[in-house]
Length: 286
Image 1 (cartoon, rainbow, N blue to C red):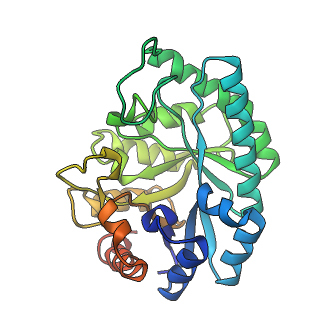
Image 2 (spheres, rainbow, N blue to C red):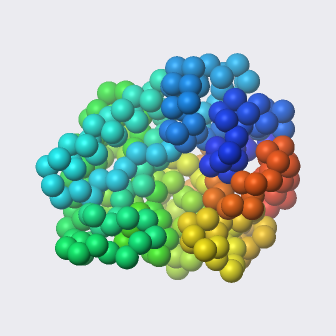
């Protein structure tokens, strides 16, 4: 269980101390933190809470949203991401997960507003530019920008990169300890090139995080909240975990679930289920 990490999004309604305490009592080795939970205490105090529990911070989520096309939007994105990099450094994690953002002016789960910029090619180019802007600052702080491709159904409103291959192309101009990628099963399990791209990521030393949860049907009213416990859906964790293992990844494995029913369950119950499913479906193949 030392490689098992609880992402705080999985227990959304728990405070940071509650989530950390539950993970420690269950024998986990790490926690993955979201910035909203870190903001409850401040980064320095959050780091102390995790250390006092004997855990690591496997990653901080999230930076990103880099597609703005106006000067004010670009400045705001750079400022926020610099703050996120500093938070990650204070927390003692080298991995800052980036969700790169959707089309400029888009809003999650809503129809496009009049005048919405639909040029996804240009949006992806701006992502590359902003990574270039931020990479030196991240390197100075010992923090890696970790690009997370999201399933194509989120391309309009959350992430204009959808495949691990695209993420690796964006990372390629930068050192592997400055820009890496996360393999999130929910977002990439469908990709016919996944095995090839995981091997490519491993060869380049780019795998910074492995996140797991399942693809469950039917979808919840909010598509983003349709993730399920490992083993309850359609994802082949044996194969993907084996590919990640063969690529040389030996780090923490975060369970990150967005699901209203799971959020409503008692925290200890969720943490126990996460640990049991990790031990059954993931760990034997790492």
